Image 1 (tube, one colour):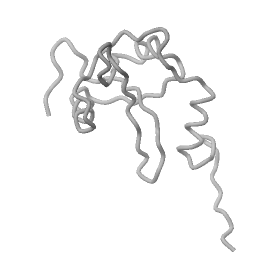
Image 2 (image 1 turned 45 degrees about the vertical axis):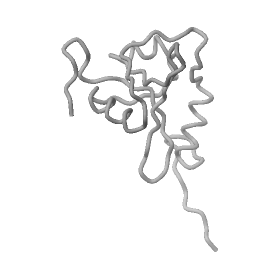
Image 3 (image 1 turned 30 degrees about the vertical axis):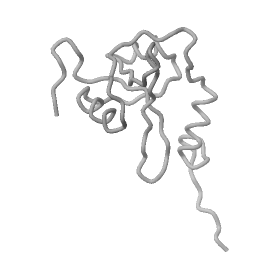
Image 4 (image 1 turned 90 degrees about the vertical axis):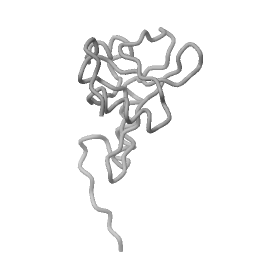
Length: 120
């Protein structure tokens, strides 16, 4: 694994959301650059992420080299630290975030107890 460059953060905040399942997987959220190529935006802080993508943006914190490694494994060759995001770019809102949390929790709201269903 390679280290972060001296002028880049060691730990980054990556836009990502849960996809659920038994392994508690998350999906990194890519964006397109000006040429239309998919890139992984990462941020040096939570305030930088929320300034760019909004308060409802879900995220995960990872070492920058690990974020690059995962992106490359998914076919994304470019990771951009603290990118400028277009004002018209899609952003999560609270309703979408709550729906994603319910979906990842198997149809239950996050934090809501899940009951075993009768199998008779």
